Image (cartoon, rainbow, N blue to C red; front, side):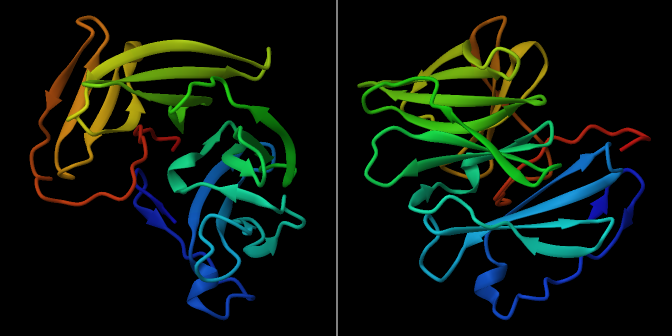
Length: 238
């Protein structure tokens, strides 16, 4: 674990139960919990080889105790989606899932502080042939609904309110189908930063004033491949 502000790092111990590289696979997320003054790390991965989407295991480690433990039982008979469909916001991990023999997806909520499942949220929107991806909007949960048309695609952003337990559509973006854009993060005034998924080197931003997509050039990273992105705000309290 590395703190880019203080340039300090610490090594996280290898789990005692990890006897193969298969068990180490998966996606890792972490968050700071002020109530215990500690970071917790969550690992989500397959129980066995070739089961990336199903039969998931969840393990948690605390930087205060430097130990790992498995979370059991975790909902069986569910299909879980890739690392792009897991979001951590305000100490809660949200994961997109689809129960076997069911059509509609749900969102599983896992509390990092209590280390237990809280509830399942219903999907905010049902559109025939539309795809959806979880995203973070600051410290809140969001969902991007991708609706494909003949020559364009529409991106609808829905924001979840924990207080009201309701979804609200906050933004709609239309773009050509040849712009294969991957959501990265929200910026100020509901502007959105995207990566061009077809060449791994270009970025675009949605300008909420002009309501248009604009090219973003970042010097020094041309030709590099990125597998994941995080939002980082420099602070002496990071």
